[in-house]
Length: 213
Image (cartoon, rainbow, N blue to C red; front, side, top):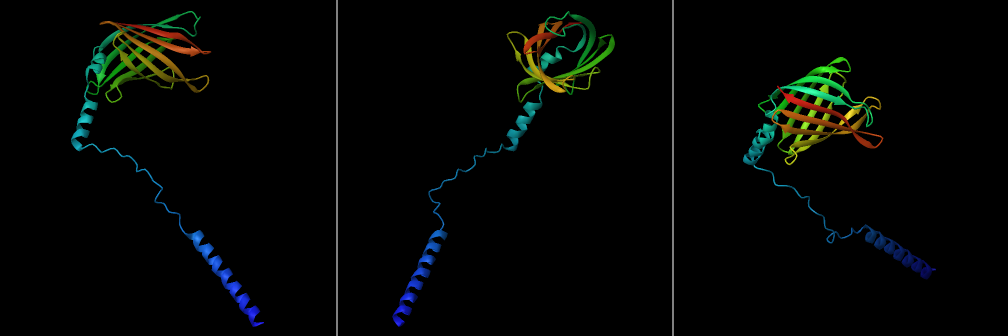
C-alpha cells in the first residue's frame, strides 16, 4: 500500500511538473531580434529663410501674369452656340470689361449682353498659380447657380491655353466635363472655343471671338 501511495505521488508530481514546463514554454515570448521595422522617412523641414523665399516666389506676379494683364480693356464678344454636333448655330453678343485685381495677380472680366433674348451678365476670374505652374479659371453668371472651374497650361507654339474643367448639368444634377481652348490670335483678338461631350462624342458647343476696342 505504501509502495502504491509512493508511486501515485511520484506520478502526480511528474504530471504537475510537466504541466508547469509546458505552461512556461508557451508563455515564453518569441524573440523579436530578427524582426526589423522600417523607420518612417521624414523630410527635413525648411528653415525660415527658405520658407520665406518660397512664399515670396509664390506671391510674386511674373511673365504668365503679363499674358493676363495684356488683356486689360474693353472687348466686343461675338458668341456662337451649338446645342449638339448637328445643330444650327445660334448667335449672341456681349461686351467684356477686363481688369487686373489683387496687385496684378488675377484677371477679372465682367460680361454683359443678351442670352436667349434675356439680359446676360457673367463674371470670370483667371489666375496663374506659381506653385502648380498652371492657369485656373472660374466663371459664374446670372443664367444659373453653378460655377465653372477649369485648369490648363499655356502652349507657346499655339499661343493658347488648353483648359479642362467640370460644370453642373442641371438636367442630371451631376458634374460633366468640358474642354476649352483659349487662343491669343493677335494683340487685339482672342478666341475661346468650348467643347462638350454628348453620347460619347465631343463637339464644339461654343465659340467666342473677342475684339479689343
